[in-house]
Amino acid sequence: MRIDIISVLPELLESPLSHSIMKRAQAKGLLEVHLHHLREYSSLKHQQVDDYQFGGGAGMVMMLEPIVNCIETLQSKVTYDEIIYMTPDGETLNQRMANQLSLKGNLMILCGHYKGIDQRIRDHFITKEISIGDYVLSGGELGAAVLVDAIGRLLPGVLNDETSALFDSFQDNLLAPPVYTRPDEFRGWKVPDVLLSGDHRKIEDWRHQQALERTKERRPDLL
Ligand code: ADE
Image 1 (cartoon, rainbow, N blue to C red):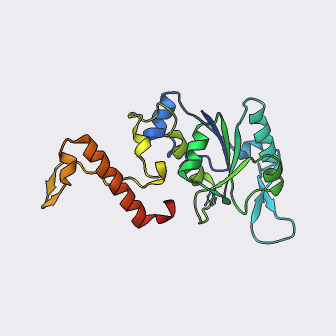
Image 2 (cartoon, protein in one colour):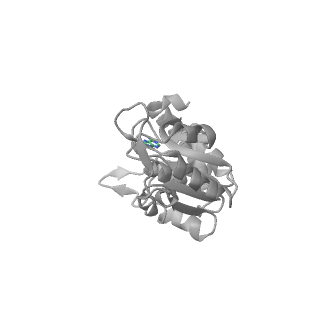
Image 3 (cartoon, rainbow, N blue to C red):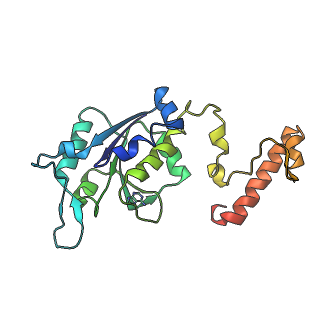
């Protein structure tokens, strides 16, 4: 999968996308991430990308022209399945959406800043608007990093143990069960006996039961 991200602050995306699983996904050639600096697509003297909003009001708006320029330059080389805009008024990201997007071909992600982007970009180019939660960030970059991470780890071959994503929280609409590692006893705090029993059937039943209970208690809305 190829993901192109357009931003006025691409530096913000460099670190989160170049470590751990995202680094491995790219090293294995399963994910290609290209960052594009929006200012480089401005034809104005000071590479300006924002302007005052029509009708007045505080806050600047990202202008049409550099964004159109950037999107169309990318589209002349690559075909995109979705052009995504990161915005707090978009559809809230969840595991189902990440699963669906991980099955797509190429994605373009536009990060907003200031008061947002000129509505005409949303009307004529954007195919999907995504929020990472009901709070406002300073820009779309951190949201884009979250989105790319959530999608990238689902690409076949990215995780070492192919099955491990299947047991994540939210797959099957259940939260993940508790996990333990060595030592089996610490300050008298014991690991549940069933996990040491070697009976895989029993262990699976226990995990499923724990996942159900945890979901009932913490996120009954998922059931
Ligand atoms: N930009 C600003 N706030 C955001 C949010 N909550 N999700 C996605 N992009 C954003």
